[in-house]
Image (cartoon, rainbow, N blue to C red):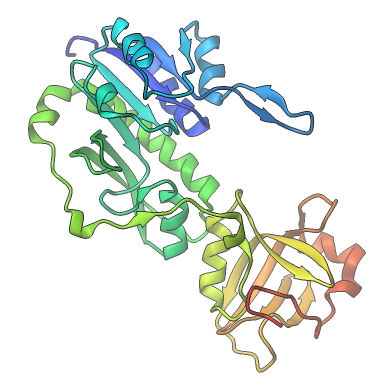
Length: 320
């Protein structure tokens, strides 16, 4: 085993906390943890610490929550830890060049894609939405560019037909944590052999806007089914029926055609709500009405069968 490294860890959500947990269980010394400032959450809008901060405090680690890293004070604070390396996982703040150059070995990022595919903010969601057969994690040396640095290690994971962004992110955390530790254990050799990314092969995973969750029933059913999976649990997909918004939590595609207008309910029974699309049919199997809990369609229909009668029509972005 090489000499343990002095590590500063930067991350915020649960995905990052899973990697911090792996580091805590490793021989490496975590000298400081950085996380975004506490944010208001819940109905009372009380300040809530991030998953990374909660784990770090429970482990007795010092936590640092700068509002920005683009200050001389932030650079000085990081310098005082005399870290060998800074590990960044879903941190959420841009690291300027001055920060990247502080640790002796630089900064590593765990990115949830097979770089250079899906650089950017939403790689897991965009991979599912695009119908990719596989994804994975990339351990990357950080540069001032967006996810452009040399890649030390990649590990691949198939995208299964039932993967949502939530379950896929969970599986990628299981894959990413040991891959990160492997990178640290072999850091000197990996830094000398790191592969530059081919910018011409890059795709960009734009941050997901809430309006993208509106189901456009003129699209084909396979596209809509992938989008439902990609946007679950957040920001979620939805459609309107009789003035109410229905959240669509789970659905799958059927190749059968239908002559009715896009968005028309073809059938509604325990198997699901079948809806006509531009091509094929979307079968909604779990949904949520306003003010109600998420429910399997079989349960939902017991109290609302009349609302989902065949011939009723959902309104989507291109439906009239």
